[in-house]
Length: 180
Ligand SMILES: Nc1ncnc2c1ncn2[C@@H]1O[C@H](COP(=O)(O)OP(=O)(O)O)[C@@H](O)[C@H]1O
Ligand SMILES: [Mg+2]
Image 1 (cartoon, rainbow, N blue to C red):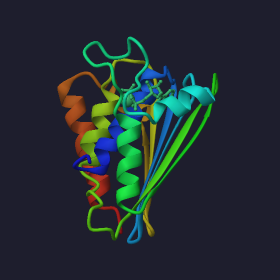
Image 2: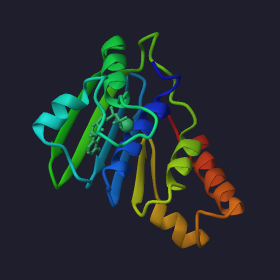
Image 3: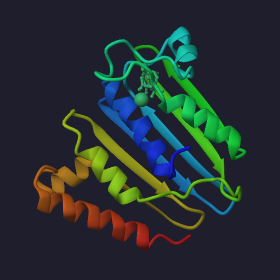
């Protein structure tokens, strides 16, 4: 099991980037009963046979990782969801994209904490690939949205350290003021 929900988010968004998505939507909902995450991308998608292989821990696309021949992201997600009374749902169409949604029972003792969402999202935005990443963050009583494109437009770029710090502080602030 990963230490926090953000680690699962990182795995899944990385998969979307690796699938050459130009647009990735990340929905993060945390409530008293459930944590619900959804990642939608317009990347290359998966056929049914790739999808069934993808949940096998001993499968990874040939050549995807230099030093590792097995994939871990999806099998680990299934394993955790099962352990914490959660669900995983994958919809994928070759050439169109993939939607992966999962829930964890927020009241289960083994459910990991959310983790540092601001740091996670900004970290994902620093990947060199060209894609927009849109975060839609919700709680029962509140929400905010932010995208990589908006941050780049406001700050000029997400390469300079000072800009990254500004972006991260902005997101941290949004998280801190989010009504639960
Ligand atoms: N968003 C996605 N779009 C297209 N293919 C995906 C996506 N997510 C996962 N896959 C496929 O599922 C496989 C397994 O994913 P994962 O468990 O994260 O292992 P890894 O990324 O290490 O290969 C990937 O190699 C890829 O073929
Ligand atoms: Mg992966």
